[in-house]
Length: 222
Image (cartoon, rainbow, N blue to C red; front, side, top):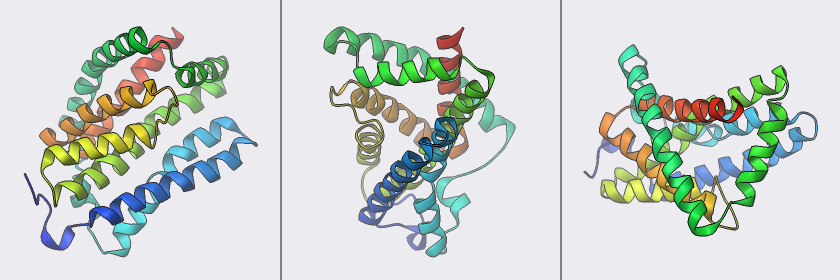
């Protein structure tokens, strides 16, 4: 469906894309600098910085952020998010198995898992990793679904909004020279985008993403 946002609330797609790219660059630069001091803190800050430019842009345009991204905090939405996130774990496993059998293991994923394994060896490290994964659900869904997907769906068909936002999520945020991580993130992004579209709730989508991350973390370390 085209034009889900009100006329005065629409954001030009080109400006939405630029805002997301700017946030990614800001996140990479500042988090990379902080990583030299504390890698755990950098992980959390990198996620939080993803929201800075989109949020600032909406404020500068006097857009009602809560209504635009469809933020409604209530028990029903949170429980729905947990349920969707739990189901997504099975989908994620199927994707990993299929892609690994086709392309082999991703070096980028292996390196990420190695760092997480090292950090979760201590209580402090585990807290930082868990905080970063929860922040990823909140901040990445804000940038790619609540902000970017909504902007695209205001002008183009919903399927295009799903595909473009999922592609940006996979290619820009989860770049992998082997392509495995990109494809996996793209497919997960499609499902999360569909959850966002069908539930019409950023809360459901963000909770689902955070739940998926935490369950995978728990399965990895226990």
